[in-house]
Image (cartoon, rainbow, N blue to C red; front, side):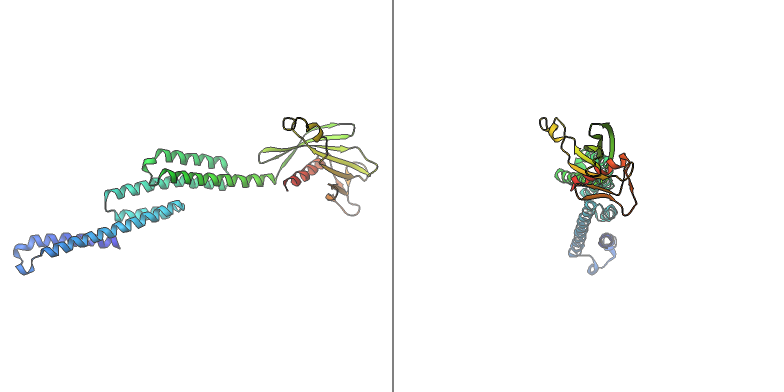
Length: 298
């Protein structure tokens, strides 16, 4: 509306001058334009110029807010409207620089979306693209270096937060791999590795002792490997200490039971009546290791 009024004011001003000039010889002296009339026209024109400038500034501030909120449709519309209220050459440069800033923020938005989708390769790559874009356009962006750095850091922090959430979720779904098995005088030993979030987080040994007539079943001792480089003196002692003791009560031939109890009271498997649980060695070791692993997360 202000643009339309400003435009009409300019047209009226021009027509006033043209008519006054062309018709002055034929107009009676009483009807001729006075100096006060011309002054009023210029004053009105200046007022509309000021209104246009104020409208331009409002739209620019609105566009900046939309850009930082990643509402790019809103930003585009505000900049489009701002072009109608340009009053000086510098206004064009302002719009151009904000468009560049919007391109920078669009890359950050894509990086953030990749992080939200847990696609971290994409997130990091887009963050690098945004940084390179900022460095290549430092003189053409509406904001200063400190603002650009804070925007980059904000998205970097978000990527870190999303990675921590992903890692936590991944650890709740571990992959337990049996990598070795050998027999000792006490029974069968299985070495198992626990992989979570793409890395090995635990390595354990499960010792299934031979049948113990005193408990009427097999005993299972589980202990975690301790790297010699981390504990050069204590590793030999620590690695021989069972961290968890499970009892597997056997009924009949093979690993059939109606109760698998670990850590004294926790029961991993139990049935009622004559029904039996079938525990092949691989399943048995994996369930014991899984129980110990989740206990260590608490």
